[in-house]
Length: 233
Image (cartoon, rainbow, N blue to C red; front, side):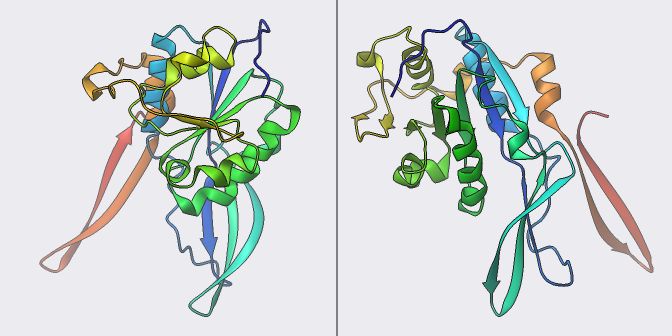
């Protein structure tokens, strides 16, 4: 692993594109939620900014590009696997000094691996966190991740990114495992949610989304359609 000392100290935080599973009749087997709030990035970016880090948020959900990456037989039904949003290769791996991916669902592991390999292709460090990486860190470390974060409270973040940027000692590391097998057990008290910094208005607008939910309720002989709006108009 190379510790960086360059002037470009931007941390790029990338939201995965949306997964779509569909049968031959184009019936969707996984709800498209591309406009849902992105709470994990809102919390993480706010915390990094409070620590004085320069961040760049890239939302790969935000587009209509579709790419097929395989098929899967489920209960005798052939499902096509696509990701929808922005093309992974549209990101310049050299544009940030460190990259960060969050993967909470195993269903997204293949998409995450595609993104991981692309971001790591020029040698920039890639940090991976989230529930799936926490459960199976070696799957990500074998495929290009520099380090997997195993402390989901945020207590590991500042010391890790300072170290990767060449600004902090490895002795301060906590709750992370590196690709060479070196592990740093949790040494710090997990952060309480009340300690998480509030996001800026700009960041909140980027992360809250515009997901609309529609449901039907039957009242007598009439059917009422209801919409719930989350986010900004």
